[in-house]
Length: 449
Image (cartoon, rainbow, N blue to C red; front, top):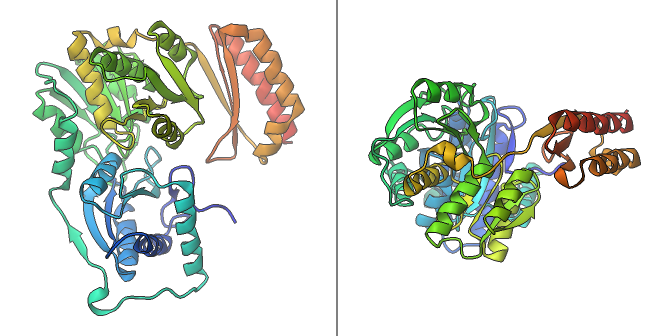
């Protein structure tokens, strides 16, 4: 039986792969689990993004939690990192986010944070999943009655609490800065405009009118074309883009160039060095970071820890080794001095703070790192393991590595969420990279035929 929890919670098309019946069972299971591992009645916080299916899944989760004797606090539409922060602040047993991040509106997801604000470790997800399976199989779990049935509380001030927290992560104001902000018609649409306006910025807003169907729809951090055009047309200082649940941030500089997660980490490392806030002089990132990122770190005399793809692996390394800056090329950046998870709003404020602190334009900071050309091919396969173990694929990779030498690198890996083999190469010559990647991809296709 396939594992219920993926790399970032349970995700799928709402009302088919992720129906309200499953959300109900997950609510019950989580309450049973946290009831066994906490004192008193478990209190669970729920936040969601703007998808049309969010209220349906929220209602099902609430029913499941209350039917198992748990109490629910509804935060409404809030960024994912707000749930992590508020779960800690409210001393909740857990926080639940209803969101499918950057996926289209038809999809949705359910992911958990512990009361400490961190995503649940695999073993806890496995225990909750086993309770879900037990419920599906008809195992009896006591149902509270009368006054022991759980209650629901809606709190209107929670978003404001989070906004205040985010604002306190910078000591700068941004008066006079012209910023184009794209909220992806998602969870940041109220919070981030409020933060920037209170800090004095002159805003041009995109993706701030969610209707349940337009989240990530040619907007946000996965579709930055309109943001780029608006930055250039308005001669803005910078453009900022979030994804649907606002745990990511990417930027556009005043010249229209993308500032991706690698560049953002270099900018923030420079800022943290300036104020003495990077004591171990190390950034944690994944195997997907560009070669140029590592070269920039060498020039800054900084170290790098490399993990598997996924913010949870970055965070595991940061917690285990005491590092306080890490992230992914995709814009999922973790500042552990402030948050227990990636926070797109905090990330954006740190970039703006660097601009003010160094009196630099966004393009000047972007130039701290040179991005090497990168080619990525996705090859759909039936058997990911077979393709990864293929001797022909390994030989094609080895030949490509010899050809690139020290000037580039090749990475072939299986997708964690889809039946894909991802073939990636980096180096100074894009035509060369295309040829090498196509040769490897052809061998992948042959071994899966």
